[in-house]
Image (tube, rainbow, N blue to C red; front, top):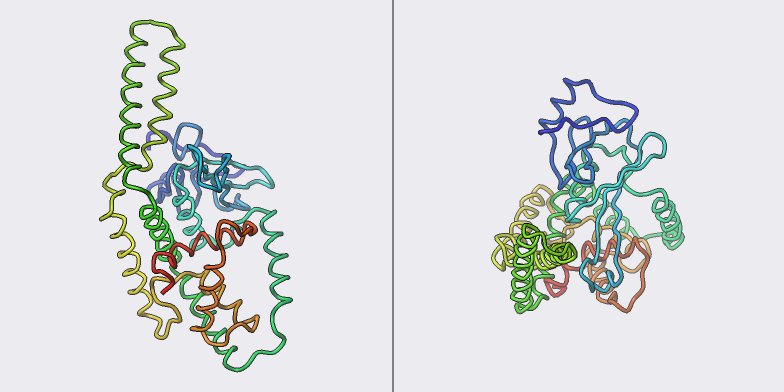
Length: 335
């Protein structure tokens, strides 16, 4: 790194330990996770600051939605942030371009630093209330078949949690495939034209600047160039955004999951649906008496997901679960 990361909290690392930790730092967008510290971005520099894990209380994701964001309308539908709480209540917020990178960083922390909380205090309270409500719906007595199913589902969920990156990649690959299949090919040509307009505007803005013309002109052109470039680039066909790459990513994710599940004989889900959220929802179905066997519980989950559409209002936790797994079922037509 060109710049040595600056200490952000009350505690720091010795220079030798910091230098060694930087070498092992795993990068996730503008931030990174080392063995001893978390590396955070400044406004314009990646991994500009560092926080030893001992100083950190919480690390969680925050998504800012613009007007029309939940309907996927508007130029910038959502902006993901990584929020870090440290030193007894201080916060540092880092903006990401790709929400997937935030999820990957949190998944790594879940595996390497499980003692650090990964939800906000408000979300923790909501989750506790939700669990109390779910506990009230659990049947006081379950059949022996239902109890065996619960034990199997719990073991399966714990097995998946040992390799969270696999489930995360399965979910993100399915979401990307769903978005690609639902986008019209004409949109990509429009995006290419818009991006070309942005480049032309940028070049003309630079020319206007060198000619010392009206300042409003080139500032306007620079603004238009940025707007066109950022709004068009996300749908342009690239080496990572084309049919072969998108479909190949799904196949690779499913094959990696299948290899991992080979170490768990009798896993209650096919690899294409192997996600902890699916197993949790199956477990709730059994606890509520809606199913006794894993196969029945999976059918209940499919029915619940089918019933959830854009006209159904859910809370944030339910929304997060549905977003994580519904694309996997939609892509497979719930088969």
